[in-house]
Image (cartoon, rainbow, N blue to C red; front, top):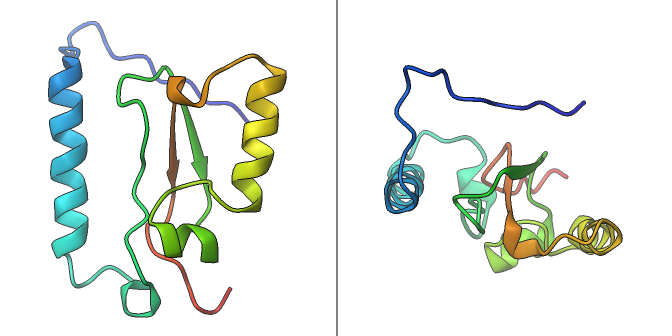
Length: 109
């Protein structure tokens, strides 16, 4: 199901620089948080990467082995499928923000 987020009129919309800084700050917090589950079994943090100012965000479930190795979202089989879909709808990958609901790969999957 597609979900759309529209800021409330009373909310200030962040500048691109502020969005980039907020994403960097959140990534640093995740790297420092020793309580995050799955951290012990993962090789790297797989945080969202791409256009912080994107109007479209793709959120996958959790990183696979390819994502864990590279530290980048959607680079394995799901990334190949995403790229095919993006070509079909004539959208550049640089226009989206891919991310994941879990930032670390589970060795159980």
